[in-house]
Amino acid sequence: MRRIIVFLCSLFLAAAVSSCVHDGGGTPTDAIPSPLPPSSVAVSTPAPTPPALPASPPPRFGPASATCEGGWSTPAQGSSLWRTPLTVIRKATGVAGRLRVVDMRTFVGPESPPSRMNYLSDIRRWYVKLFAKDDLSFQGRFLVEERRFGRGLAAVAPYDTHGFVAPDWVGFQYNAEQPKAFSYRGLPGTWTGIAYDFVNGGRGLTIPGLPTQSAGCLNGT
Image (cartoon, rainbow, N blue to C red; front, side, top):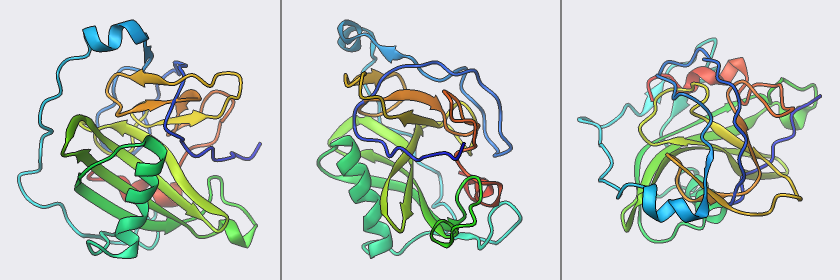
């Protein structure tokens, strides 16, 4: 069954998915995060601390390879390619105020799995690591996707994780019967939907979130 991207919409629901490491460089967390009960959010969530910043600016270009066809680049600040993923993240999460972008990459690759349909052959994706200057509890890593028929937030990972590794990256499958929003430890904001392993697939979505031709574009993040 072809994976249907359900773009994240700023709310979510729980579902633990078993972990499995994908070749992406990085250290996985123990498991897909579970939702925090509403009564425990204020009590058990530690006060946010300033996020760690890289000692030196991250690279701005990456060469083409078998796992990152076409390579990747960092958009010019203020350009359309820079603003687009930030607009998507704001709309999906509801975050307001100033955002500090720590790292951003954009790259183009096929659908996962690759499709014979031409309009799915060149999907633009963005990797963005950022935090909200006015709300340090909002810090994370995001994957934004743009297809011919629209764009949206595809997955989110904790700020202090690295690479493209399961189960760090969490996607959310839309579920009309579960409209309630939940907070998840390590993830910014609140989300609706059924959480699943975006790297390897899960919850009936058995297809990797990124195709082999693009998964390596997150190496070194």
